[in-house]
Image 1: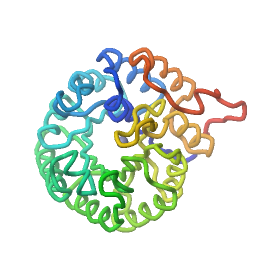
Image 2: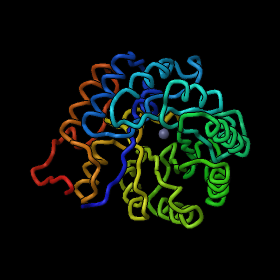
Image 3: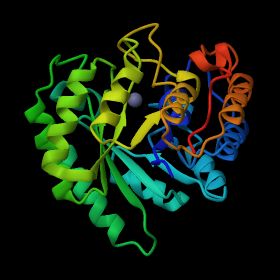
Length: 306
Ligand code: ZN
């Protein structure tokens, strides 16, 4: 059997929070269910932040409650603080994703905390979560790990310091995030190698944006360095608040196409996955949709990994 690569769909969170419109709750749930039915086993379905901050996420509680009923689906909710993590737990989320900006400027702008203060918040979340009767995984995400729209260059040593702090805080997994999409493949290779040398397979995931069109090249660099989990969003939904017109996360369909073509199993049926774009378009009319595979169709040469 070929090796498995985990694809985590983040469109309902990262994509929708950037969308101009607001997707109705029922439409979100139906879209998430359809993606799960195509074989997607991990979906970040929303974030637990105040509705006045991100109105598109006001219904995350309901979305988590509904989607945790889908058999076999691991449901993640993003939470920037303990309060959000407690809400994610109460709604039944299997996993909470906690963003920790490595760059000071992004951290203060987004979280109103320094990176060190946010690492301490992760420690509080881990401590609280472990005291609960039900298990909820804590996935820490190192935002702006490859560059920042406010601070510019983010030194590798700064990323490693935050990632080590998160490991010490007890985070179950650590993701390296190209939040604004500035990374290039050589940089991915270097940082992933350094982080895994220090922290091993706890650094298990790359969160990539396609701002510069390098998203899949970056994913390939990560894959070659041993990364076996990637965040992506259907139709490359979303954008980058600091790069108007840019596409969002790497496109799930195109990522799955690359992985399966290379012989990595994802468990995802591409025809069914591409068909879920119709539900996204219906729930969010007029939102730009990206992706090469959906435009060109599956080539006759395509074979799923065995
Ligand atoms: Zn993102």
